[in-house]
Amino acid sequence: MSHVHDHDADHESVYAGLTGGDDSRWAFGTDFEDPLAGIDTTLPDGVDAAALSQYCLMLGDDALIYSHRLSQWASNAPDLEEDIALANVALDLLGQARLLLVRAAAADGDLVPALPEGSPVPDEDALAFFRDEAAFRNVRFVEPENGDFAVTMARLLVFSTFRLAVMQRLVGSHDTVLSAIAAKAVKELTYHRDYAGRWFLTLAQGTGESRRRLLAALTLVWPLYDELFRTHPVEALLAEQGVGVDPAAVADDVAVLLEQVFSVSGTDRPDVPAAGPVGTGMGRDGMHSEAMGPLLAEMQVVARAHPSGRW
Image (tube, rainbow, N blue to C red; front, side):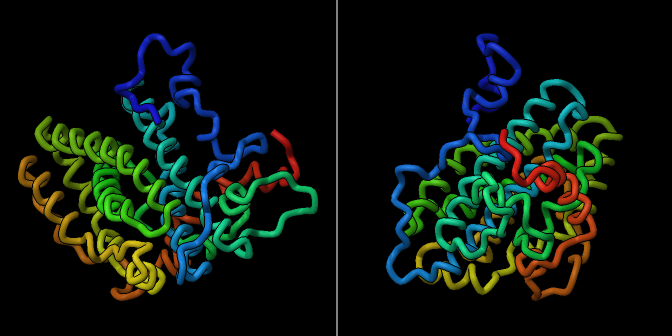
């Protein structure tokens, strides 16, 4: 997928620049090919289909919900360059979400919501737009409203660092589909992390106001940090089977990298309590923040209003 630094004057339109010529990156519609067409989706021996499906939902929902949240910066970013950059980050995550939701449906079709007879909506769209809040398995970290630009950069830095560490390990998954998805995601997430890291440093070492906002942003973002590394039983099971990644296993790597960023930028790791009862899965168990309901209402309204629509 193209990124902001890949955009040249030879793009024929803004649309072409955002999509890189790949219409399949758009989520809702009926004229898309199966993104896993031609790929062997046979489950590895000894892997529980329901568990694999739930694991793909977890990773896919993280990307889907954060993609929607970041897309809300469109036309609202500080300047046009950042507007396009954030749109591209959102599109990258949307592409990852689509692949993971397709994999989830292929592993266990029973989890796909029932739609009106004759509805042309593909499985990944059904999972994105017709599940209720309690059926989503994303971490709460991706749910809060964007806040100001400093909040978005702080959250994006943490999330992309965490997700990149997971995907780097997931490249070695015994599931060939997850391995392929992860290999593609690593390239995208490396850009996301570096983009957010550059802005983090710029804000920290810029004006007194930019530094004040960044420090305030860290305090807002950090209470949901610990939840990223809580191991759900599904994650533990698939990690043992060589298919998934235990998020607790990447906690130290993520902490080391973030400490490097904090050191270079002259900031400290926030000292704030975790949000929610420690030891519970929270978002992974379908328990979400107050921000989740309004987000889903906005994201799903068109699809739910026209479940039999053709696009």
